[in-house]
Image (cartoon, rainbow, N blue to C red; front, side, top):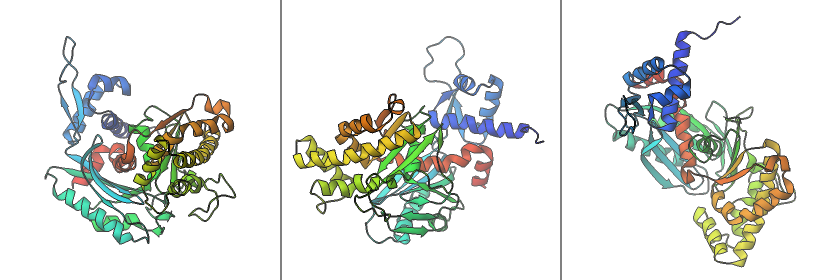
Length: 400
């Protein structure tokens, strides 16, 4: 029979839990932490003292109390001292950011990525250069505790290999190892699917805060998704869960980059919208998608018809997901924010017909609160995961 957790294990858990509260909620009073964590005041005081000594948080008097008596000290994350590098590899763009504890973006770099033949060097090279530039600008007393990337493709659990990225031409790409080698920070690089990480970001910092069950749909050139069930990301056996863009909605439909016919992303993605509007070839990317939505708002019949067609397939896909997962919320992010806003009536009409009443009655449809940074924020949260699980140990290791 296994013995219960040791005092050290309990302490490590409580340190991580307290740091996570401050990381996600920002400056928080000791009194509030006592209430949230269900621990006594002396334990909270001891935990904050340990985290303060490690340089992860600082304590200060509140600016305004409005109450008589001795005010409760406020615990604030050391955002300027403890940070991670977050990377975002999209079909059209590469982004690198230095993100401080607490989620503050301290510095960032971005460049356009050319579509066409996949080249690992053309992705890793600029991102590594951006990270080194930002690293050189940091103070001597700062410490990097993690590096993580959001990648537009299916990422194998644990090894950071991108197994497939049909819209980028990526197959079995050892992205994590190559990025770690180029950076030479002495830290492993963690990698996750961009839509999965965006789902986590919206759940922890965006429109889905407090929502235990949600489906996030992300539009880039294709369509990805992330599913949160009872507060946890549904990863699947190999880590490839959430590939909702390759759910077949029209078996005799358009060809998809994955080799199938009528996948959700083939019927709803960028190309489908632009071709339906008669604009494919005149531009690509989010600006082209926004131009169709803007034209529909101005009364352009062709643009309206294109949005109606795409919205119909999007609504069918959402209805399927709602019937399967019974989420409290569906969030539309990336390019799908604009497409949903331009076709919301069509999506809701499909839901009214194809979703089970028991699953749709309390459903909320929302657009991303984090906008184009949802994937980047998700990558930052992945990079912070280890320090939030074992703050003292990770910080000691990173600073050695």
